[in-house]
Image (cartoon, rainbow, N blue to C red; front, top):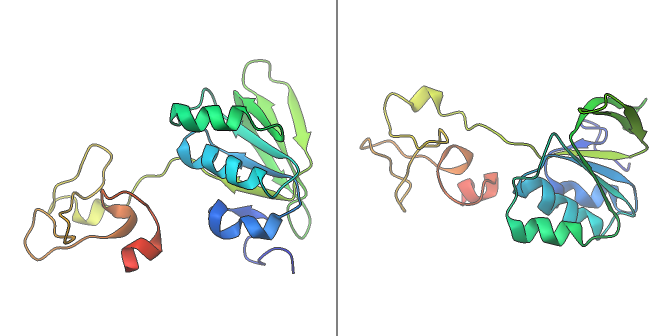
Length: 168
């Protein structure tokens, strides 16, 4: 089967799930580093990548320049996704231009959601120090500002937000 049944064409990890849409047109939603890196990665395996963002990109300049140079990436800045549609799996999406209100459809077989996230550190927020992004601040041994409490993975302030990093 081409797509995992639980997602049916909507994905959240371009590295892990990009192979599922090789040789198909896809869309990436977002304008930060994750989205642009995802678009770049997917452009190597997909004939067309639509990069949809609400406004100007916030990704690092080097990543932006890399994506701008790709011939098979179509950028839709100032657009919002109105609908992802399909019967058994994704067959397209409908976007709306925020400035004009004009809508258009993109026939894609996969949609990668690569927008910002907020770490869920609320249960520990009164016990440990958080940074401005709401991440738990940790030391190299994963210890926090509270003795006996350790943190790892997406909720911490380390580089690389992947479960496998936390497990390691």
